[in-house]
Image (tube, rainbow over all chains, first blue to last red; front, side):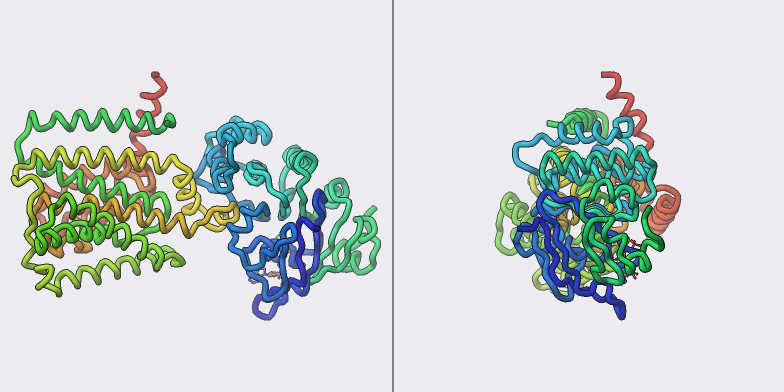
Length: 240
Length: 311
Ligand SMILES: Nc1ncnc2c1ncn2[C@@H]1O[C@H](COP(=O)(O)OP(=O)(O)OP(=O)(O)O)[C@@H](O)[C@H]1O
Ligand SMILES: [Mg+2]
């Protein structure tokens, strides 16, 4: 049974069919890449599976159970964790408070929140900034903290919308390690949206390519990168 | 108990101790002014929970105080029921009305929420004035005083105790998971939802809690001043609460405490200038909102840090 399954999802904004019959699944323990040109509908898909939008038609299943039409917080509590392409944090809360809020939101039984926050502060190397309001952080630090919040309480499936966009190589590496570690230790599934082919190649055995609201191809990165449609519609040239 | 709670408890206890000594040095007029000021501290602090912490800029808070006051007042007037039963009933009714109003305005964005809650308060205001057979309208509903005396002393101590209890309760609430959720909703509701927070439930709960606290303050207030009029839901009452919180520090724990008392005291002494004193305060609020939302409380922050680092 797939960890996360989107079946025939459609979503229209005015005259624009942003998701047009999208079917995709992520197996337990898999890290799947989701790539495609700007405006292909990747973020729309993320929003559809996490309950930000209700699909016009189609179904979303988490570990075999339908979550279509559930409220966002219900979906999150069932273990589907997401990050936002444009980093979202609670700007007036400190780094530690942001982590604690994420902890309390899906509080697991018999776990000490303070200790978990402390561990995450170490893991994200945000120690010196622990008591700084999130709005004062740099872009990379914000991305790191958003990721840390997602990992405060174990989820069954993580949907990360461009977690590596516009951040420096050191932080990129830290985020990469966190993903690999959570995947390895908890067997959690990941759907990672990214334009960074080098990272996708390293992280994702399988990728899905979206173009114009549709799934255009699936397979290993090297397989899809050879397809003429993908080269023409997205990559521009073949990957070296 | 968290460190934050212990610190606040010590500071509140210390302040209460000083205030408890005031009657040794002053007459009953000063005690009266301070009693009313404490009433506003409770209103300001509970409104701050809703507006300052949760971002629900309600303009109906004074109406919930009136619900508390009129419930107990009417029960006493028509049914001869004791204030000690009437006040808890007022608290509950204010809480339930807050819950319902909170449910109704749930999906509204800031300005619409402000208008809708204001409309609720105005409706209640008009009802109290119009149904004079039941509420005595502008004539005023005479209410039994709590201790059978008009000497402010026992009421002063009652309000001092109430204020301490309410502030400690609010401190606990703000440091609890619910407190984290409240501030999260104010900052970014979509993100709060995406983390798994049931924002609907949180917002309604905070509406009910803050309204019940207003009802509590209103109930005791009614049995102190002994004459209730619809003036209690005049918009100037709400404006006063907003002024107090903004001057003190919107969304800070200390804000309503340091804002309410001085504003009420200054307003009492400026009363001879009529409505103009509210206009002056409104101007101050606009300036504060425009240039910084920090308020007077921020001046205390360095001192607060230093005190606790000594330990
Ligand atoms: N809420 C919305 N209302 C109207 N149009 C929208 C909305 N959200 C997305 N769109 C449109 O849907 C299309 C797909 O957008 P989407 O954000 O899903 O693309 P994307 O693949 O994530 O692109 P990028 O790589 O730039 O992040 C775009 O044309 C976008 O303008
Ligand atoms: Mg996107």
